[in-house]
Length: 106
Image (tube, rainbow, N blue to C red; front, side, top):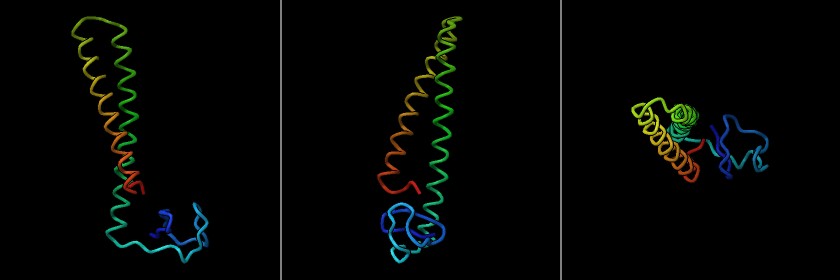
């Protein structure tokens, strides 16, 4: 893997950076540890993204359950799960923002 001076990461050195247009000599080959970090970051970010979708679906389902209002026990369960999903959705967004700011997006 190679990294341009602008931060763009690619598997093979191109003639010029697709992001900033820098020439091939502005790319540096990454170490094994740097490559491992990027690959792990990509995998972690993918997991976070999938969890966001699941949490959004959970919120939608809970809202439907709350609207049905079958009984207090069901409503309590739906409210609790919705609260958990909302909090953790925000936690994931904050974590992803941190990854971006630390160049852990890969």
